[in-house]
Length: 329
Image: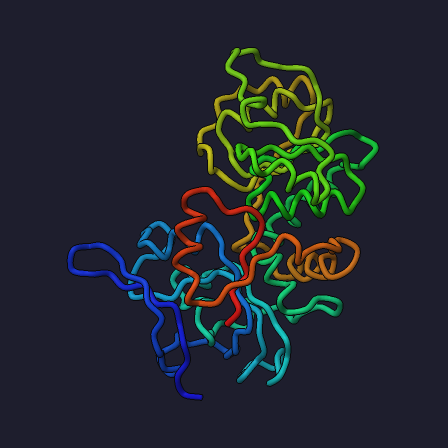
C-alpha cells in the first residue's frame, strides 16, 4: 500500500484546530529505520491535548497524534528487526512531534521499538500502553526500594485514570492492599472490582491543617496528581515509606516541608516513561506479559475505531474516562 488512513489534526486560519480522518502517503512519514503497520493504539491524555492543538505537546501542525502503537514490521533497515516481527512503540517522540499511532502506519527509529514479548497480544499491549508502562515503572521503583505487601497499605491517586487503573490492578496482582483515590462517585465500584481493597475520596487526602506530619498510614504510593494531595500523602507515610510520582493533574506545585523525609525517612522518586532506558522497558514489558499481567484486562477496556476518536477525546478532556480506550486501526 502507498496510502493509509490517519486521524489528522490541522490548524485553521482562526487558530482553532480541526480533526478529520484522511488518506496519507507512506512516503510522507518521517525518516526512521523501521516502518510499522499499526494494528492497535490507545487514547491517553497527552493524545487528547495534541488533538486540540496544545503546543506543549505538539509544536507544529498538521499532525497525527498517538503516543502508543502496536503492530507488525513492514520494512526495516535495522538488523534488530525483520519484516513480520510483532512490535510495540510507546513514548519517546511518537505522537508528539513524530507522526503517531492514530495512523495505520508509522516510521520510527529502531531504538524506540520493542519486540512484543511472549505471552502478550498486540491488543493487550495497548490496553497497557504508556499508562501501563508508567504504572509498571512506578511499581518497579517502589519494589527496588524495599516495598513489600507485608509493609502495609499502598495508595494510588487518580485511580480511575489510565495510570491509576493499571497501578491498582498490578499492585493487587502482586498481593498489595491497595487504597484507590478518586473524585468520581461512579468510580468506587469500578476500583473495588479491579482489585482495590479500599476506595477513598479526594477530600480525604487534601489536608489543609498546615501540620508538618499526620498519622503514618501508607507504606507506598503511586501518585498521578501532585499538588496538595501529594503533600498530604507525604505527611501520611509510614517510616521508610516510598512514593513514586508521575503526574500533575491536580497541580505541579508541592506545598510541603522536609519533615516527612528527615523525620520518617520517606523516599520520593520521579518517574518519566517517555525517555526511560530501553532495557528497563524490555524488562517491564516481560513482567507485564507474565507475572504482573492482570487476568481481567478486557473488562476495563473500551475498543473504538478512528471515527470514534473525537468523541472519546472530549470525554477524557472532561475527566470522564474510566479505564482504558484502545483504538483498532
